[in-house]
Length: 164
Image (cartoon, rainbow, N blue to C red; front, top):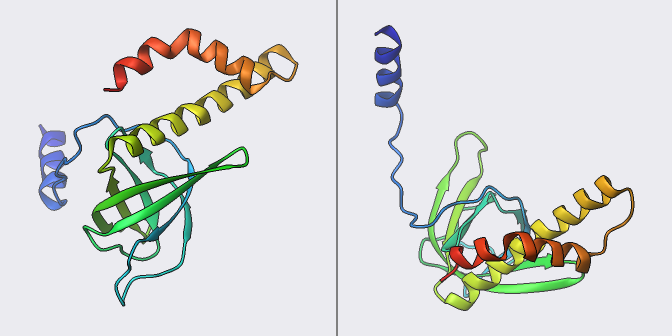
């Protein structure tokens, strides 16, 4: 009973979390840079580098030293193996994180092709991690192509269920 009371008090003293997302979040740290499209006078015009906190089919969450206006359009760039993927997104929330002292910026993808791009980038990074694991297990360097073929055999059906 005592645990229930202290737990209830803890919830009463904390700010309630409101869930806005409609997609499953994947905690995944992917490098990215972003800049605000048509920034206002108080917004940075510079491209900022960071990493994602989590990724979903509908959007992603990343930290920023400065707030980004809700509704602002941003251009996200995600690098992988010498390629740079560009994705347009819209800011749905920018809130100060009291733990990190940064702003958690949540964005959604207004166009399905941008959501699909991010999903593919996520898969590419996961395949690269899988390649590293296979190389370690087998004691030889496994190519990205070999790892991709194995990944597709194992997970293609699951991926198709996650998308559209």
